[in-house]
Length: 440
Image (cartoon, rainbow, N blue to C red; front, side):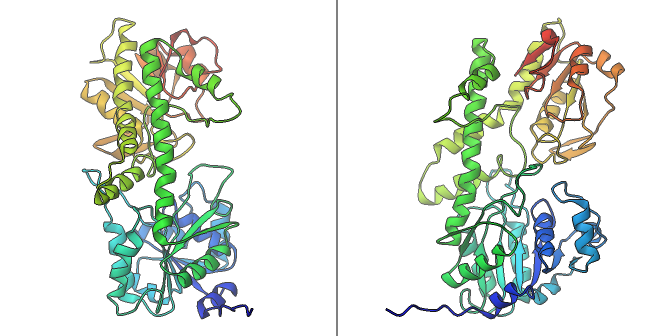
């Protein structure tokens, strides 16, 4: 039996020799780390962003993403491997174009693909034969095939015949010290077999392990399932926290004991809500798409409902804690410790602390916050600046709510000085003198 030899394409040869020019559209938490990883292995990479200030920072080697090492960005810039621009016409010069733009939800929890559509239309204006276009932005299954492909084919070129089209969902965990772009397994799905092969070749050059799947649609489903899995399990932990509150149990004690079981369980913990770009948003992409098939995603809907009501629960519990000292929420001075959605991170997108802050304001509390990682916030109608965490401040506030666990906060001093502490993150679990601490 004769073995069929697959002839490599000119683009694959350019990729293997590092001659392929790479364009990364969107220089945020996904795009910039990816750009640096590609440049580190010898590719010439151009970043594209609407924000001229951000493009200028990249051109001059000024880092603004915590997951990127300052010295690594400076090194690839100094070696002439990295450039950045707002000029979308330069997309025509790229051999591979990777799309890393935001995919938010609108006010009705429906997907907002305006950024993806806008970028794809720009690419369509400048597309040429032989290019690979890969979407990394998280989205609902079918986006690459139903949205990107028709826009790109308006150029007269055909996917799988004149250009290659793929989806490879980002897997970024901001602040994770163990897993980076390079050592996180990379799922890749193509519009067609040849697009898949070219995309796999491309991603293999800078990422340790590639996981090919049968289609771009399958790759899109992988991503939304991953985040839905987390959302549902976090919601379960939050619901147990609500029940434990009613029953007078310490949810952290219960969960820590449960997680000692060596099989059949995985640790997920409650908190004041969920934040970041992924967990609060991505499951709703799947929920929205499922309606097209007359399918109700009950777990996703319930998880979203449970997680979204946690900030309200925190504020309601804050009122109960203040009542212990015969104080009302109205007029009390409340200090939130942390506005970032995650510890030791400068990202406050969809942070539950933002919602807690707003709800406290609506209850006429005198609310302030401290967070050296996010000293300024402007989201969902909350515009505020961090205050210094001094002993005088801790002595005078009526209640401290720990909303984010940052390593640069002396929680023992907070516990020692504050009149009351509501701990939503279990940050005080090993501390002494916890008689004034109330857990979530």
